[in-house]
Image (cartoon, rainbow, N blue to C red; front, side):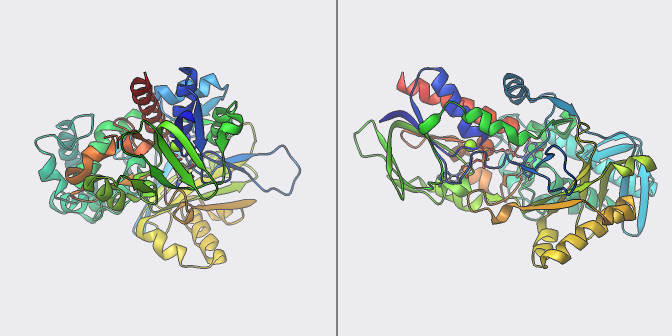
Length: 458
Ligand SMILES: Cc1cc2nc3c(=O)[nH]c(=O)nc-3n(C[C@H](O)[C@H](O)[C@H](O)COP(=O)(O)OP(=O)(O)OC[C@H]3O[C@@H](n4cnc5c(N)ncnc54)[C@H](O)[C@@H]3O)c2cc1C
Ligand SMILES: [Mg+2]
């Protein structure tokens, strides 16, 4: 019998386990996949020329200056950061137009505005002002008890877009935001609750620059470092099927196909949708079941495209492309300067991803490269390596970047995100009150769950 069994060895579970062990409790960690990390994983590029391995992050990669818990973990494990490359001109493609501008926007415009017609830009900026006013009314913590929450939660983000924008460009500006930002799934704007979008912007603001830095060698190094020292307390390749709390006993049994693991308390550290595959005895309350059923994972494939060098910089381009292209609405330079290689990270999301995923492998690759060529030029068509990570097809993750709330679910099930079920506590970036959907939210949730369990066990 361990003091605590942690289910899920993603960032949240590993952080919880680390903190519990530091407070002197014994911990077992049970992970379904063959390796730790969940949505935090790196892979070496396959390059013909012999050179030291160059890594890309298939999952999360960026970190921002206010991610203090996550930054502390990087520091503690000796992982070094570098500024995410963004010098030079951003490319914007909209309709048949392509322009370059020395700025950026992902909700928040910075630097120069793009040279779209001023009627379009003004429409987007007027609506943005109204959106920011709405965001400012919300609390930073979970929003569902706020007086305005129920009314906002009845609407989709698309409902808001329809009433606040008057040009196709402004409508796309907000839809793009919805499909690009971490806490939003990504989802399409007609799928996600207005409350969820506004609150996410309140508590995980793009204005705080969450994509400021990258990590030499990849963020995906961290999970293995966090797992060091767990030894045979870490069990890999065993999906948890059931969690039983016999009535009147101060013990919980975590059941896999191979074994039963016993603890005085359990932390389930995964998105609600994945916890939905576990059978709980006694049964979970109705609001928690509705959460697990309704809080969908984002529909996103991340594609890493590697070149011999960051050739786009020679044309004065930053490698950031934004636009209503058929497949890639967002891509960014993710080149680690220590490798000399040029790496673009591209995202295919939402309904675009549904159409794209139905294509064959060659067609998918050609489609992505064609969009990159539209942003940066024909050299995009000749990469050294091309890597897709189709997160929605990963059985123990189910999507990227994170989970999102459809209309009505915050109001119905907001309390169920964090309310313990007897001796079972919940962690994972989805339950975080600050930086949900990001590494920082995962760390925060793991630390809080560990503290709650430590308090219970005395
Ligand atoms: C493509 C992509 C890009 C992203 N970009 C960024 C970024 O740039 N910056 C940022 O801050 N964040 C980013 N994120 C989000 C970030 O990666 C996540 O917030 C974080 O890694 C989530 O950690 P977690 O522990 O909460 O969940 P997870 O990593 O999902 O961990 C859950 C674990 O539970 C395991 N599990 C599931 N079911 C079971 C079961 N039945 N039994 C046992 N184990 C089970 C899973 O295998 C997994 O290991 C991105 C994510 C993705 C996928
Ligand atoms: Mg975890």
